Image (cartoon, rainbow, N blue to C red; front, side, top):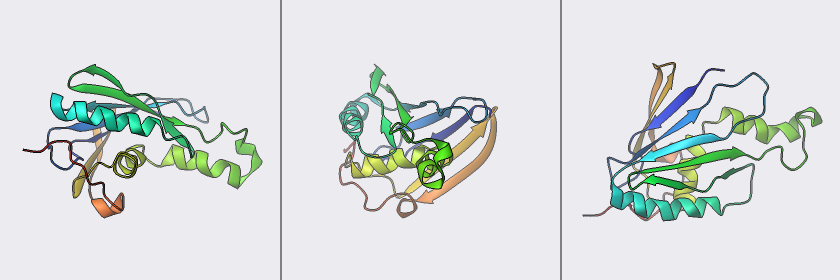
Length: 164
């Protein structure tokens, strides 16, 4: 599989110039799932507030995935990663459909969706009503999606990152 990037330019309510990119590195077929890095960029003040909320995601320990510690590279850039944990409990793909269900879900379901869901439900952040998602491979745009909030998460969070 070749490298794929998914860009979400302004998913948070109250700040239009804060977005993120998920980068799926190229990998061999049937190899272990690598961590999927997310590069989050925006103005310094909302990024500082976001950093605290991203730490809340790291504390989430249940389920088939986790988040790495967010690292602030500058006052306008944070990086963290999605980590597939579906096979950590000793399950193997050969054990049948139930054992592989979480693994397949993590491999097929774009990481932007659990990230946005966790930002709203765990971090309490309010997401924008319309979320744009751009998918690219090899510098070629594959898809442009515009999804309504309720297609991604319910209920929405209450807190905004930026207010005037």
